[in-house]
Length: 300
Image (cartoon, rainbow, N blue to C red; front, side):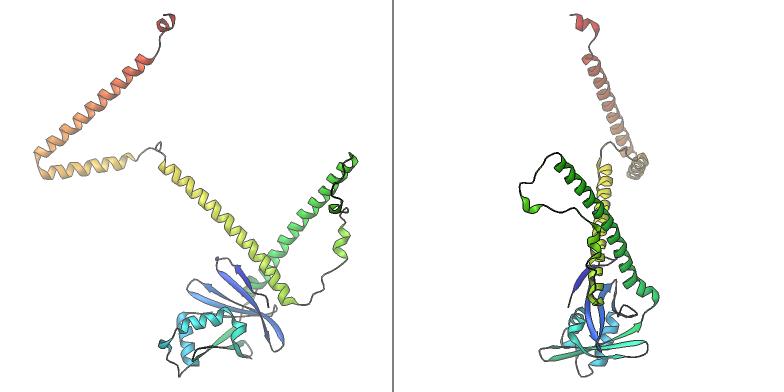
């Protein structure tokens, strides 16, 4: 049995496992999606789906276990344990026209908790998203990598041939390789009929692609965020003058409420600060003029 922990589009963990029902191979997975949970079952021809919430899980536990007081133990955790490893806890299964009913049971201490999955036949869109689309994406990526590696191997063979023509020789003879031939791809064709495991292998590859893309997106977004923060912190960015005007107006209103003496005191402080700024700017200009050398200074 092959377990696959993957990353789907929402970045959530997805576990696919083999499940044999009536001597027929299936693959089943359980995922958490926002506030709900989903179970998918497929034979690679059709798909069955059930959406679960905390309320539906509790109702099923009550219905399947009428003699148990669910408040006396952690029923939810026991149920999640069964859903995370469905093949291990399968107790019975019944296939109806459009529904797959799978009964689960978990024994813990003196508690025997039963739970049921009522999977309805899914839509073609659900089959596409869960089965067909990952297979197609993986196939396209494999073809792309196949072309890249094939061209690289051919270039390496040409490079080695040129080294040999110039008289270069290998010191470690055992690492020598023969020139590559595409006929090697046609000698041993894959003849496996274990489609369940083959499907899981392809899905594993697809999940690695999705994981790599998600890391690249996170790196790009973090770099953009750091650039934006640097621009905000940079002292050369001009301040918003409208905010300063609003602050000054607010201070003026507060002073008017306190009386005319405060207003005069505030104006005097402003004029004093303006004078200091004018004096400092004038002195700065004088220093610049003094530091500036004239032609007479060079002659002397």
